Length: 57
Image (cartoon, rainbow, N blue to C red; front, top):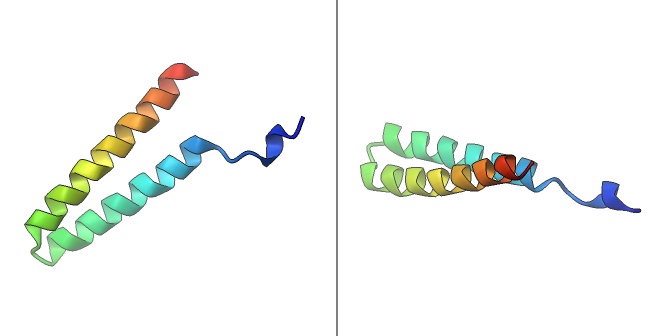
């Protein structure tokens, strides 16, 4: 009945994914390749969660 109040988990994951990519880009430009690699791994995990949600639809 009140389904419209629930947030869309895909949108939340998409925002987190984009934030991680932006942070990774910033780290890469600053020469911190270790942080860049870590952030990219986290971004890939979030992306796989997004793909899993898409597959369920």
